Image 1: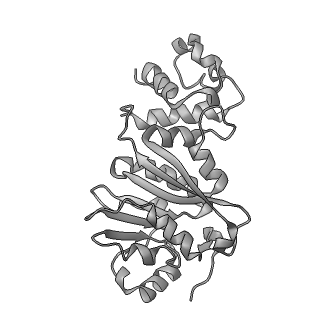
Image 2: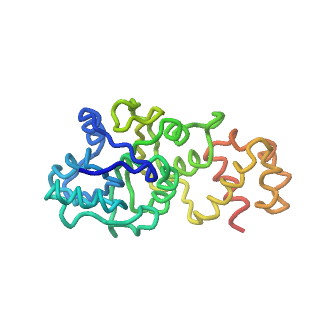
Image 3: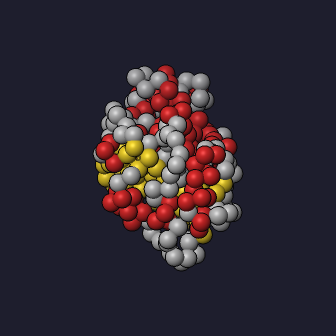
Length: 252
Protein backbone atom coordinates (compact mmCIF):
# COMPACT_ATOMS: atom_id res chain seq x y z
CA UNK A 1 0.00 0.00 0.00
CA UNK A 2 0.92 3.66 0.04
CA UNK A 3 0.38 6.65 2.30
CA UNK A 4 -1.31 9.96 1.54
CA UNK A 5 0.89 13.02 1.65
CA UNK A 6 -0.89 16.25 2.46
CA UNK A 7 2.23 18.19 1.52
CA UNK A 8 1.75 17.02 -2.07
CA UNK A 9 -1.95 17.92 -2.12
CA UNK A 10 -2.92 14.30 -2.58
CA UNK A 11 -6.58 13.31 -2.82
CA UNK A 12 -6.99 9.98 -4.56
CA UNK A 13 -9.95 9.26 -6.79
CA UNK A 14 -11.63 5.97 -5.92
CA UNK A 15 -14.97 6.26 -7.74
CA UNK A 16 -14.61 3.93 -10.74
CA UNK A 17 -17.47 5.51 -12.69
CA UNK A 18 -15.83 8.91 -12.34
CA UNK A 19 -12.45 7.48 -13.41
CA UNK A 20 -14.06 6.08 -16.56
CA UNK A 21 -15.89 9.36 -17.28
CA UNK A 22 -12.60 11.24 -17.22
CA UNK A 23 -10.84 8.71 -19.45
CA UNK A 24 -13.83 8.75 -21.85
CA UNK A 25 -13.16 12.46 -22.52
CA UNK A 26 -9.99 11.47 -24.39
CA UNK A 27 -10.08 11.54 -28.16
CA UNK A 28 -8.12 8.29 -28.50
CA UNK A 29 -6.30 7.80 -31.78
CA UNK A 30 -3.93 5.06 -32.89
CA UNK A 31 -0.33 6.13 -32.21
CA UNK A 32 -1.23 9.06 -29.94
CA UNK A 33 1.13 10.08 -27.15
CA UNK A 34 -0.42 10.51 -23.71
CA UNK A 35 1.06 11.91 -20.50
CA UNK A 36 -0.61 11.48 -17.12
CA UNK A 37 0.39 14.03 -14.51
CA UNK A 38 0.35 12.76 -10.91
CA UNK A 39 -0.94 9.19 -11.33
CA UNK A 40 -0.81 8.67 -7.54
CA UNK A 41 -2.35 5.29 -6.74
CA UNK A 42 -3.24 4.59 -10.37
CA UNK A 43 -7.02 5.27 -10.28
CA UNK A 44 -7.18 6.40 -13.91
CA UNK A 45 -3.75 5.01 -14.86
CA UNK A 46 -5.10 1.46 -14.98
CA UNK A 47 -7.61 2.53 -17.65
CA UNK A 48 -5.05 4.58 -19.60
CA UNK A 49 -2.69 1.60 -19.76
CA UNK A 50 -5.47 -0.40 -21.45
CA UNK A 51 -5.95 2.06 -24.33
CA UNK A 52 -4.87 0.40 -27.58
CA UNK A 53 -2.06 1.88 -29.65
CA UNK A 54 -1.24 4.67 -27.18
CA UNK A 55 2.33 5.69 -26.26
CA UNK A 56 1.82 6.36 -22.53
CA UNK A 57 4.02 8.06 -19.93
CA UNK A 58 3.30 9.19 -16.38
CA UNK A 59 5.03 11.95 -14.39
CA UNK A 60 5.13 11.29 -10.64
CA UNK A 61 7.29 13.03 -8.02
CA UNK A 62 6.50 10.76 -5.04
CA UNK A 63 8.96 7.82 -4.77
CA UNK A 64 6.49 5.75 -2.77
CA UNK A 65 3.84 6.10 -5.50
CA UNK A 66 6.39 5.25 -8.21
CA UNK A 67 7.26 2.00 -6.38
CA UNK A 68 3.57 1.22 -5.81
CA UNK A 69 2.68 1.77 -9.49
CA UNK A 70 5.60 -0.35 -10.70
CA UNK A 71 4.63 -3.18 -8.32
CA UNK A 72 0.88 -3.00 -9.02
CA UNK A 73 0.75 -2.38 -12.77
CA UNK A 74 3.44 -4.36 -14.64
CA UNK A 75 2.42 -2.64 -17.90
CA UNK A 76 3.73 0.68 -16.55
CA UNK A 77 7.36 -0.55 -16.43
CA UNK A 78 9.66 2.02 -18.05
CA UNK A 79 6.85 4.53 -18.55
CA UNK A 80 7.18 6.58 -15.35
CA UNK A 81 9.13 9.84 -15.30
CA UNK A 82 10.11 10.23 -11.63
CA UNK A 83 10.15 14.04 -11.46
CA UNK A 84 8.29 17.10 -10.28
CA UNK A 85 6.06 18.12 -13.20
CA UNK A 86 7.09 21.76 -12.69
CA UNK A 87 10.76 20.83 -13.21
CA UNK A 88 10.21 18.30 -16.00
CA UNK A 89 11.08 18.75 -19.65
CA UNK A 90 8.45 17.93 -22.25
CA UNK A 91 8.18 14.12 -22.17
CA UNK A 92 7.85 13.85 -25.96
CA UNK A 93 9.29 15.85 -28.85
CA UNK A 94 6.11 15.29 -30.87
CA UNK A 95 2.54 16.30 -29.92
CA UNK A 96 1.10 14.71 -26.78
CA UNK A 97 -2.12 14.91 -24.78
CA UNK A 98 -2.02 15.67 -21.04
CA UNK A 99 -4.44 14.15 -18.52
CA UNK A 100 -4.50 14.06 -14.73
CA UNK A 101 -6.14 14.50 -11.38
CA UNK A 102 -3.87 17.46 -10.75
CA UNK A 103 -2.56 18.05 -7.21
CA UNK A 104 -4.66 20.99 -5.99
CA UNK A 105 -1.77 22.86 -4.41
CA UNK A 106 0.03 23.22 -7.77
CA UNK A 107 -2.84 23.12 -10.27
CA UNK A 108 -2.33 26.71 -11.49
CA UNK A 109 1.44 26.23 -12.01
CA UNK A 110 0.63 23.02 -13.94
CA UNK A 111 -1.54 25.08 -16.31
CA UNK A 112 1.31 27.53 -16.81
CA UNK A 113 3.52 24.51 -17.59
CA UNK A 114 0.99 23.31 -20.17
CA UNK A 115 1.05 26.80 -21.69
CA UNK A 116 4.85 26.55 -21.95
CA UNK A 117 4.37 23.25 -23.79
CA UNK A 118 1.35 24.50 -25.78
CA UNK A 119 2.86 24.01 -29.27
CA UNK A 120 3.17 20.30 -28.36
CA UNK A 121 -0.10 19.86 -26.41
CA UNK A 122 -3.23 19.64 -28.59
CA UNK A 123 -5.41 18.67 -25.64
CA UNK A 124 -5.33 18.70 -21.85
CA UNK A 125 -7.94 17.10 -19.57
CA UNK A 126 -7.60 17.78 -15.88
CA UNK A 127 -9.35 17.69 -12.55
CA UNK A 128 -9.12 20.81 -10.42
CA UNK A 129 -10.64 22.37 -7.37
CA UNK A 130 -13.98 23.57 -8.76
CA UNK A 131 -13.27 27.27 -8.21
CA UNK A 132 -9.98 26.98 -10.13
CA UNK A 133 -11.73 25.16 -13.00
CA UNK A 134 -14.45 27.84 -13.07
CA UNK A 135 -11.82 30.56 -13.11
CA UNK A 136 -10.03 29.06 -16.12
CA UNK A 137 -13.32 28.69 -18.02
CA UNK A 138 -14.74 32.14 -17.03
CA UNK A 139 -15.50 34.85 -19.56
CA UNK A 140 -15.09 38.64 -19.39
CA UNK A 141 -17.23 40.44 -16.83
CA UNK A 142 -17.07 37.57 -14.36
CA UNK A 143 -15.55 38.22 -10.94
CA UNK A 144 -13.40 35.10 -11.30
CA UNK A 145 -12.16 35.96 -14.82
CA UNK A 146 -8.42 36.52 -14.56
CA UNK A 147 -4.90 35.76 -15.74
CA UNK A 148 -5.38 32.04 -16.35
CA UNK A 149 -8.75 32.62 -18.06
CA UNK A 150 -7.15 34.91 -20.64
CA UNK A 151 -3.91 32.98 -21.14
CA UNK A 152 -5.56 29.58 -21.49
CA UNK A 153 -8.38 30.87 -23.70
CA UNK A 154 -5.92 32.66 -25.98
CA UNK A 155 -4.62 29.24 -27.01
CA UNK A 156 -7.31 26.70 -26.06
CA UNK A 157 -11.03 26.16 -26.23
CA UNK A 158 -11.77 25.61 -22.52
CA UNK A 159 -14.81 23.51 -21.60
CA UNK A 160 -16.04 22.89 -18.06
CA UNK A 161 -17.15 19.25 -18.37
CA UNK A 162 -18.62 18.19 -15.00
CA UNK A 163 -18.47 18.44 -11.20
CA UNK A 164 -16.85 15.78 -9.04
CA UNK A 165 -18.17 15.33 -5.50
CA UNK A 166 -15.80 15.14 -2.50
CA UNK A 167 -17.06 11.62 -1.75
CA UNK A 168 -15.33 10.35 -4.92
CA UNK A 169 -11.95 10.85 -3.22
CA UNK A 170 -9.86 9.45 -0.39
CA UNK A 171 -9.55 11.51 1.73
CA UNK A 172 -12.53 13.65 0.65
CA UNK A 173 -11.39 17.24 -0.01
CA UNK A 174 -13.32 20.04 1.68
CA UNK A 175 -14.32 21.46 -1.71
CA UNK A 176 -16.06 20.38 -4.90
CA UNK A 177 -13.90 19.48 -7.88
CA UNK A 178 -14.40 20.05 -11.58
CA UNK A 179 -13.02 18.57 -14.78
CA UNK A 180 -11.81 20.79 -17.62
CA UNK A 181 -11.10 19.90 -21.21
CA UNK A 182 -8.77 22.24 -23.09
CA UNK A 183 -8.52 21.73 -26.85
CA UNK A 184 -5.95 23.64 -28.90
CA UNK A 185 -7.03 26.49 -31.16
CA UNK A 186 -3.59 26.37 -32.84
CA UNK A 187 -2.55 29.84 -31.68
CA UNK A 188 -5.42 31.60 -33.51
CA UNK A 189 -4.14 35.08 -32.65
CA UNK A 190 -0.62 34.30 -33.88
CA UNK A 191 0.95 35.32 -30.56
CA UNK A 192 4.67 34.78 -31.13
CA UNK A 193 6.08 36.81 -28.22
CA UNK A 194 4.32 34.77 -25.57
CA UNK A 195 6.34 36.16 -22.69
CA UNK A 196 5.31 39.72 -23.59
CA UNK A 197 1.65 38.72 -23.85
CA UNK A 198 1.87 37.02 -20.46
CA UNK A 199 3.54 40.11 -18.96
CA UNK A 200 0.73 42.31 -20.26
CA UNK A 201 -2.06 40.08 -18.91
CA UNK A 202 -0.40 39.61 -15.51
CA UNK A 203 0.12 43.36 -15.10
CA UNK A 204 -3.47 44.10 -16.15
CA UNK A 205 -4.92 41.84 -13.47
CA UNK A 206 -2.26 42.70 -10.89
CA UNK A 207 -4.39 45.65 -9.77
CA UNK A 208 -7.78 44.51 -11.01
CA UNK A 209 -9.78 47.20 -9.20
CA UNK A 210 -7.92 49.94 -11.03
CA UNK A 211 -8.46 51.02 -14.60
CA UNK A 212 -5.96 49.62 -17.07
CA UNK A 213 -4.47 53.09 -17.43
CA UNK A 214 -3.22 52.79 -13.84
CA UNK A 215 -2.55 49.05 -13.85
CA UNK A 216 -0.48 49.15 -17.06
CA UNK A 217 1.38 52.42 -16.46
CA UNK A 218 4.74 50.69 -16.08
CA UNK A 219 4.09 48.08 -18.76
CA UNK A 220 2.84 50.02 -21.79
CA UNK A 221 4.64 52.97 -23.40
CA UNK A 222 3.47 56.54 -22.60
CA UNK A 223 1.88 56.79 -26.05
CA UNK A 224 -0.59 54.07 -25.07
CA UNK A 225 -2.02 56.04 -22.16
CA UNK A 226 -4.52 57.93 -24.33
CA UNK A 227 -6.04 54.69 -25.68
CA UNK A 228 -9.74 54.62 -24.70
CA UNK A 229 -9.50 50.87 -24.05
CA UNK A 230 -7.49 51.75 -20.93
CA UNK A 231 -10.56 53.39 -19.38
CA UNK A 232 -11.75 49.87 -18.58
CA UNK A 233 -10.69 47.38 -15.94
CA UNK A 234 -8.96 44.12 -16.85
CA UNK A 235 -12.03 41.95 -16.24
CA UNK A 236 -13.99 43.92 -18.87
CA UNK A 237 -11.61 42.99 -21.71
CA UNK A 238 -12.09 39.93 -23.91
CA UNK A 239 -9.11 37.84 -24.97
CA UNK A 240 -9.19 39.62 -28.35
CA UNK A 241 -8.88 43.00 -26.59
CA UNK A 242 -5.73 41.85 -24.80
CA UNK A 243 -4.36 40.65 -28.15
CA UNK A 244 -5.08 44.10 -29.62
CA UNK A 245 -3.18 45.85 -26.80
CA UNK A 246 -0.31 43.37 -27.16
CA UNK A 247 -0.07 43.96 -30.93
CA UNK A 248 -0.31 47.77 -30.69
CA UNK A 249 2.04 48.37 -27.78
CA UNK A 250 4.10 45.34 -26.77
CA UNK A 251 5.83 44.53 -30.07
CA UNK A 252 7.60 47.82 -30.77
